[in-house]
Image (cartoon, rainbow, N blue to C red):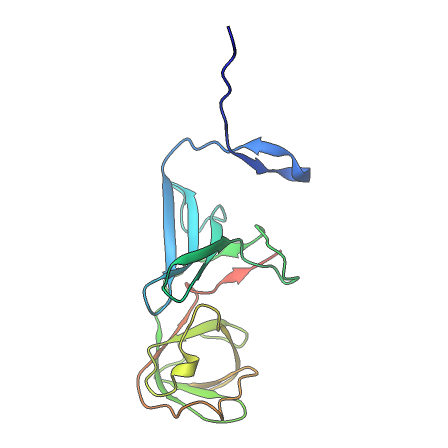
Length: 182
């Protein structure tokens, strides 16, 4: 009597060992969407894992011009290499309301209140009317610099060639881009 073979999925573990992928429960998913509602970052963990635990596997999704998924990949580390070493913070920080964005060699954003935003924080901007070049497109993540009162700079962003700011917009931080790699 011939033995039957069963194909099982493998993953690479420590020292590139192949290991069985075992799923013993349902999976929890959390997504961070772009302004069109398409998930850009997707967090996956076994059901019952708290959002504050570091057991979430993070994937970055890329789309074609018809919003079809063309790639699901690991986020890159500081060396530009795919990495599973991360911290991901799903916080409940409220978005900041934008009042103005300057056209300047270094773009300055004015918000209604600075809240807990700090220099060095990573942010995305959404729903701006006029200066739409700053709206999140899935890749433009900004670094906050030189906070003064209710203003801050978008580090290294020259907005002189952008369309003039008209109205609206929010600054999202914390729950959107708190990715750090070890």
